[in-house]
Every structure is written in C-alpha cells, then in structure tokens.
Length: 495
Image 1: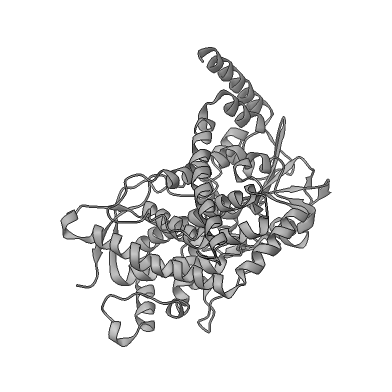
Image 2: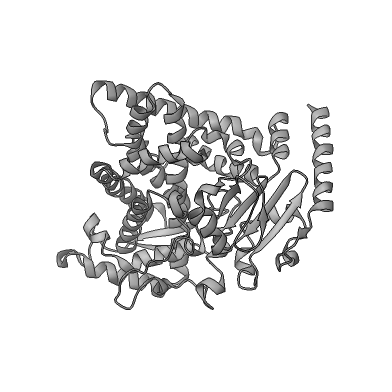
C-alpha cells in the first residue's frame, strides 16, 4: 500500500501545482480577486467567507478556470432567476454533479429533463393528497409528544446535575430523521429516545455522506476518483457509509412491500407510493428513500440548530415568540405545560418570520449547482458553456446589502412582517432557501410545520441555556451544520 500512497501524493501535488499556476480569476474582474487567488482557497472557504465579505462585494460574479474545471461563482439574484425559473429548461444540475452524486442513483435530485419532469409530476400529485399531509402532521406531533418531550425531560431532570448538557444539533438530527422515516417509509426508527443512544450508525452515515458529496461536487472529478481508486481520504469511508444506508433503506422497503401485499401499513407514505409507481424496478424506491432521508433530515435539523443559536443571541426575539405563543394557547394552559396542534401552530406569524430570517442567513443548502446545455450568454453578460459549473451561493445572496438593505447581516424577523401583521412574501429568486422555479421544494409547508412544532414546544415549556465558548462555525457539507454541535443545558419552565 505504501507505493500507492507515494504515487497518490505525487499526483495530488502535481494537481495542486496546476491549481496554483492556472487558477487566476478571469474577466469580469471583481472584488473576489482580493479574496480568492487560488482555486483551493476558493473551494475550502465556500461556507466561511459570506459573513466577512458579503457587505463589501459590489459585483457578485466571478469565473474560475483550471484544467478540467470551470466554475462561475455567483450570488446574483438575476442569474438565480434566469437559471432556476425563467429559462429553467435551458439548464441542468451542473456538469459532473450526477456522477459526483451517484450515491443518490436515479432519485429525483439526480434527474434532469424529461425524466425529472415525469418524476416531479408523481411527487406533486402525492404531496397534494390530503391523507399524506395528515400523515406528515401526525408523525411530527406524535414525535414531539412521545420522543422530544421525554428526552428534554430527561436532560432537564435534577438527576443529570446542573452542568449536564445536550447537543441540540444531535437532538434535532435524530428528531428529523425519525419523522422523515415515519412519513417517508412508514417506520419510526426511534433514534430519539430515552435512554439516549450514544451513537446511531445510520444517522452518522447520513452526516458522513453530506461531507463526501460536497467534497466531490467542488473538486475536479479526477481528484475524488483518484481518492476512490486508492481508497483514501473521504472516499475511504464512502463504501461503508453507502452500505449502511443501503442496508437500512432495503430493509424498510422490503417491509413496505410485504405490507402492501397484505393490504396493511402506511398507505400514504412516500415509500409506498414509490413502490407502486416503480413497478419492477427495485432501485428507484431505494434511491428515492435515501434522497428523502438526506433532504428531510438535514435541512430541518440544520435550521433548528441555527435558530436556537440566534435566539440565544437575541433575547428580545425569544420574548416576542414567547408572548405570541401565550396569546394563541387556551386560557387554561397559560403558564403551564402545553402541546400544540396544527391550528395553533399556523397562527404563529412572528415565529415563522424568525425561521425565515434564520433560513435567509443560514440556508441549510448553502450552494446550488447549475449547468447549461448549450453555450450561452447570461443576462449579466457572462458566457457559459456545457462544461461550466454555475455555483449559486444562497448564503451570500441572503446577506447582500443591495438586496436586503444596510442591515443585511442582522437577525431581524421584523423584515418578514407586513404593516398588517401578516407574513411577507419574498420571491424565490431573492429568498431561495427552498430552491426556486419548477424545482422549488414540495415539502416547504411540512418543513415549517415541523420546525414550528419543535420551537413552540421548547420555547413555551423549557428554558434553554446555550453553553459558552463553543465553536459554532459552519462545516463544509452540502447541508451545513455547526462544526462541534450546539450544546445547551435544559430546565423545565413549569413545575
């Protein structure tokens, strides 16, 4: 194995030299030249530079060229609207993205063109079924009552000691994983439970997969393919990760198939729909199940984690949310423990505004990739070809002063509320946390219901004290999380 490592090191060093020699930002000349002189720095800092530079950037687009890779990096809402909405059919998911995301197989997230259109029709019709919406809401509220509350009570118990902490990020990951499996596969894996499992392999595997996928999607294909061939780097854990997830989805889909034949089980879960639509193809339901878990688990848990950090930093916002909650619950439940129903949650306007503000500043998916089928000129004058990866930074877009005003870096839920006290609508190309155009997320309403149910339950019934001195920097992953989690102490608000 040693000779292989030496060869790999030589090849990687050669690539790095090429990067350093060729990766100069070409016209149009922008402020990005002052930030990224080399492609390695550009790639390594995708999730770190927005906070420091968004307010200073006057031009939002730059082109990076190296042998075998051309990236048009942009945070321009005009390009976002052009590629994702008005000229949607002229663009695909980006050159090499389907190959890099091969772990997701033939799932809708990996499709383009006619294949994507037909699969999207199936999903849209299913999401519009009343019974599916009811199943999703029931799964969320049941999980809050039967898992989230017992776990919070466990960590709030005096038996744990005054210094006992819980990693909220891990808690939210397990919550969203369980609920996604419930309405997606008709099964609750109960990873959020008491006693608290120290390590859940399938949850860990989802996290590992997101890290590998971002590494693949932002590097020349030869880099990660060499890593895969030599079995080193992040690719070393890829086979193990995929096997864990493949075994899990296969087991659950086999159970659903048996239940379908017997005429029992969750008829309106997404997995059952995939099985009925895919006919004899067993791979499609498995691919869709993995894609659903990746999207449903990661995005919701990431939003909740950043939200509670913002809440700790902005006590006035927490007070307003607490007052809004008090105003919508029955008089008999004021100043006592209360679990919320969907009707009550739908009335929480300021809470949803605070969630939108969190999504603006920290969209769970920080970057979107696009590619053009043919050579063309974008509305901004930039030329792109079939081999150009158009990388749209949603996080920079959400922080631009030219789009959001002088206070673009501030956490300010009030920007989302109209003079009439209603939630303000922003166009998707300006606020693309749920994507934009035909690819806009079908699970948007479910995501808001899930996050509001968790936040309302915690804010009304518990005191959360975020531990000081934590490293809350974002990681490099397709779904951004905090580097070391978000640790906090929990105590009950009501006796």
